[in-house]
Length: 180
Image (tube, rainbow, N blue to C red):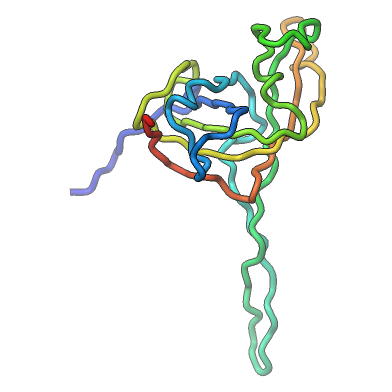
């Protein structure tokens, strides 16, 4: 019997992002639950979807002699940069560990960080458990573009920063986090 209405998960507020400034100990680059819980649970806004979606070039291949069609061929695959926006406290920059500047301190331009993304969990989660499913990326931090979230009375000072996937692909997708 076919399943007509499969169970679903709401998207609103159901994404947790953890930034690890220290590389995972495993040679695979996949962090353990302990390493993830030691990271920075980021409160960010991503322009577009953070599902780092690859794009692939397509083009016309060589037309064979006597053929009436030109074949389409697949080309290079690239992962676009993801723009992240986060708030910060400008007058507290330079004071390590200041509440509100954790993401600012973790995403240093030019540094490489491990980013763990958990979909379908409460975005306000402050710890992960063994068995949680995550996508894991090694990302390079771009320059910081300081500004604010808008031009209204309720806006905050913020930074917009590009993050790119190092190596062109995730370290792991849909990976269950291990306890040790």
